[in-house]
Image (cartoon, rainbow, N blue to C red; front, side, top):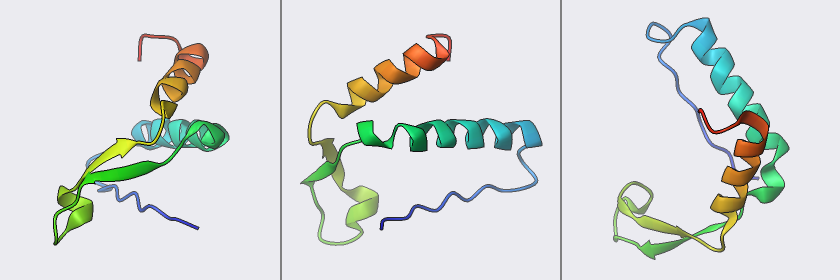
Amino acid sequence: MELARLAVPRRVYTMSHIEYAVDRLSWLYEHRDLVGGLKFVEEPPILRFFFGKLEALDNWGAKLAEAFKKDFGTDH
């Protein structure tokens, strides 16, 4: 299992901001089958996750964007 942390400063964002983020993350979780992998194309010896460059393994980003447009339209 791979985990990611989402840190949000509580004094900066309103409840509607948080609800919007939860809605989009829920949508992404429902469409997780469209998300593919990434590979390092540039990997520095230290702090590779901060300064390295990643590239998609296939064209999954376009497929995910198309599903997003279908569900939410193009005005987002």
